[in-house]
Length: 222
Length: 186
Figure (tube, rainbow over the protein chains, first blue to last red):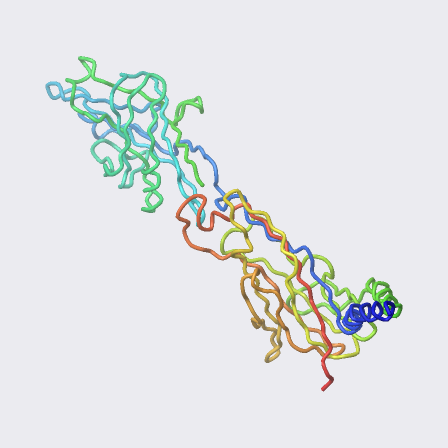
């Protein structure tokens, strides 16, 4: 009684399988693979750029002079003394930045200028330049326009002046205009000319011999 | 049962046979290898048993595909189908699984007016493609397809680990099986 029952069960299991094997066929393309990039932004990480143009701008009798080829930048707060001598000084810098691409965003950016000599404790501003300029042509009297929107500030030191310019760099990308930065003292005209020790920052420019001393913009992309 | 085993053995023995098809005119493909499972039916496919698509460092919006020729090596007309089998995947650091978004697209090469064109047969999310019929294939006939996988571009992600960014570093493997079932001759 048990043997025919087992046989029926075996037939029920095996016959359909055997039939299928005889009348169907299959083959495959196995192990297809699709891997997403570890980071969709090819620039991901922190990239450091050296200034590609910079110049100091000197107000006063030298207001039409260009200082694009000197190896120092300056920031000074000084008012005119008897109509002579230097007054305020500012500096402009620009950097070649890569195209942002579809999958990148700027998550951090710092502008670093190495100090030669300094008046410490001054509040220094970094503003986004909105007008065009050239290293060989820019002067105080034709200095480009800037925007105070999202301007960055830092306190001057005797080693490096560092501004967090994340929103400024983001604005550079969003505006499509990369005219760089202008750095200046927050409170200009506070001292009567260089004769009585106007607060002055002397900073290394891109023309300085030691590459590590040149102005740097570090941008973190993600 | 014995007959079934013999059939399977014959199928395994035949599986190693290789056939070379003429080179296509417009979209190059590799030679067809035939896996013949029985004396009555048999289909061959380009890169038999091997991957058709190997895509690395993909970004949103990118697509990677491969051309495949499926040939009916048997003596009966068959209904052809493509089946998505095993999906093996690893999430990226942000937790996104590619099966949630990856789309498969199958296009068939057709010749119209002397020109080879591609006609979309179907496209859908790969996780929702268990089996898809591809029509009838007469004995000795072949059909060419382009199968591609695409990571859709979901637009600007709201955060570094959100939106499309959730899929950074994610990986997916999938087996595609070409099936043939007999149909009544016309």
